[in-house]
Image (cartoon, rainbow, N blue to C red; front, side, top):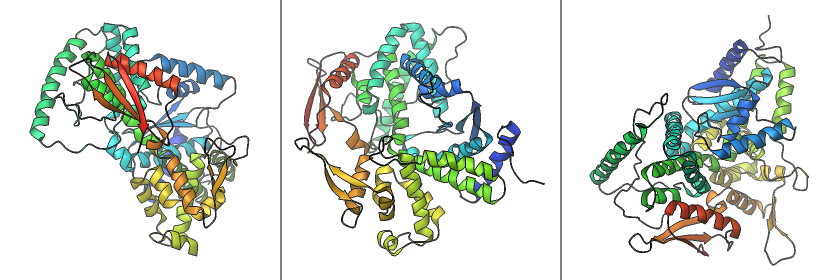
Length: 495
């Protein structure tokens, strides 16, 4: 009698269930992964396109930009210019994994291993996600946000609501807290302020929901009050979170507009860890699915044909074109992440003298599962590359760095993958994943609330690079819309 979990390419729900249980046994037993409860959903290509267009979330308020994205992605897909992702996974509890109904059974197994266990483990254990996201509460909050925006559209008009959302979306990258704030000196004072604002918002909130059309129910509680909220009017400048500052101190916003800004900045904060862990997150998921699929084959649970189909897909995902290849678009995060995870396993099991010199803390320890789990939990892309990228992998990827000066007529190769260049190449590659260097450092510098109410922003330039003139003016117009008065921006050197 065959032990194969499936023998045909067509899938069924019974086969999915049987395969999921086998994958779960390996993930929890062999790899010692720690995951949220899983929720697997099989969706159509149109539903997958819809997930693309609404920030890959299962619930989302209405906005014209989502429809525009859907139309673009659908046109590209139908014309054959782009393919659909095999899966979408949601950082929530339960962790929701969407499987495309057009996948073969082998691909469904790969996707469950990749998303339901690889991404799921990373979401639950990485310190950035634990610090900045609430997996248990995000679905309820999205449901509230969807109903709240719909109610605002009903009461104030769609144009009014979309204008606020347009401006808020334009500032999402500058609408996050990048560092945890220190605790307030007086806990009682903060609680009293929170109580006062909660009471005020409850009154406004009840008045808003009283006007809801039939069939739309209000949520059971008023919006969540953040622990970092300050209701005293003390602006504590400079402030890096522009959406937070505008929400708290704008002289012109109404209560419902402030709550709309709050919704957008909470979503921006929710996605902030994902921007810092693209290499690690995809590397973890790719390493996990590669390990699980190979163990399934070793135990005789999938056929050689399924293994070859899996390997064909896997190698396509982790392929890294050379710098002079027409397909080159930068460092593939799947390739770099999977390569580093596999390299850590090799160093733990069979290190060279070079590995022992570079990584004495874990070279040859034999515990690659524990070493990887520690890395997945305690690092982000920048620090992970800085600490774990090995000379061997730099040679395998043939990494080198280019020095670019605007006044020079040509690039100059400043470091290559050799003894003199290893540390410089690793350091420069890590800097590319430093979000603080890749996004403009714009802060609120001053605001005259008692005089002309002029708001002054400051951009601290990195390496003397100013903001794009056209984009700057467009974004400042959105800031002025939310502030309600004149806004100025100065640019200075960061140092």
